[in-house]
Image 1 (tube, helix red, strand yellow):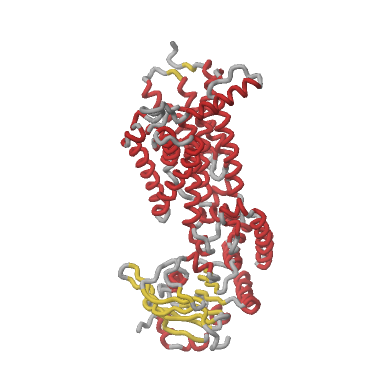
Image 2 (spheres, rainbow over the protein chains, first blue to last red; image 1 turned 60 degrees about the vertical axis):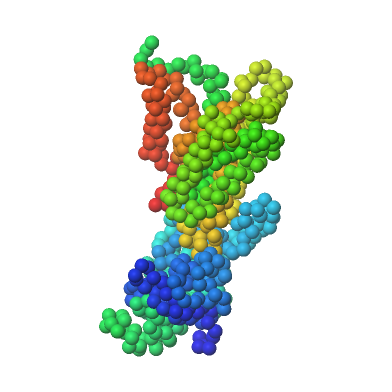
Length: 259
Length: 329
């Protein structure tokens, strides 16, 4: 990916405190449009907290966050998701007591049938949209080999299938930036490879940008075009996989050498 | 007299069953709102008796004290209950589920205790039925006319002497059927799908661009509206609107109906309510060598026992879906 691509997401001096602990301590980073960017760092580096701040689940104590040029720091998570920045969770949040298909159709944006008034006054409009959404959901499910499970409760899926469902569901929102928190954790290598292939394809075919947290270095080095490294709540390195791998500070952080 | 005997004659009395039917129908209405809140949205509304009180008192006060037409007072009482639901929900629906439950319970008690103390408006603990001054107006004058109309219509069909509560029974159950169908239809839509997602996991719903607060408020306002309707029928049945009709125990009766019928099943509520009220009313006729207070307490104990047995052997209720129970854990 060209380095001169403009950033889709920029965070500047983001701080998030929990009592006396600064979980994110002045993180500054950006994600280039159309890139697959990995966010790595030792346990407790603040990666998931940063994710939560970026997506609105935590309010930052300080700092600015801009997405597609608009300030989003402190905005509600649902508003950020609607603007095209959609996340998944480290521990999957498949909606267990809902069918797989409903998990998918739920994610469609601008659905008139989700407004109470439209149920009464625009029945034809929402039914038409619902048919479109269902068709689209089945298409996306078939890409992930989940179409045969569409009628089953999401709670009956295996852990790996739930991960895929969560990714498929996030895609149903038609995001511009997809943020995945440990997408490979707990899934078998075959499914994992398929997931990575999907990411590459979506980036090239639909121009979706990815930011993902990952611990598997082989995946990070082999599949991302940029790596951001966090330690102790700060971004300590940022560059191509090769650059990051050779960075002294990164090696220190991982080996526990200390500053 | 035998120390333990049942007066079976009571069960062959049509009046007994009509009375049970009116209460059962009223409590299906009260539980319909809970089904929407608890079964579909995952919010524990413990204030249903309070919303019922707001509905009944608004209707009563507007007709008796303010001279409003009955037909205008009815929709206004629904609006009042919905506004009260939104007022209670706005600050408290952001809280954790258990705090929300406590807040709704407290709000319902605020309504009941205020009604008891605002003697000028509500006639205090004696209850509101007719105006004390000026023209003699009762809140149920128009309802009595409607009821008489239905009765003479039934007589014209050849039913020589219907029980006096038959018109109320028919109207209550008419509302039960219509509102059950309406709720079933609106929850079987993309809107209902968002409610279920909020029930399952609010953060997942947020991450997909849904604002849970909006959906929870709508769910609560609809439950309050239906509770107001239940409040009218309770008032017509008792012919008075008094604070003791809106004790928290009546919210829990509605919960008992919900537990018996099963979560996320609308039609289950009808069977649940029929069983609850048959039990509650039939146990009146068990003669035991104990005094009336003890016997009243025993009735609740029997209902409690039935619920415990049901939980032990059929935790999803009679019509709930077992998968939804198991997968939720």
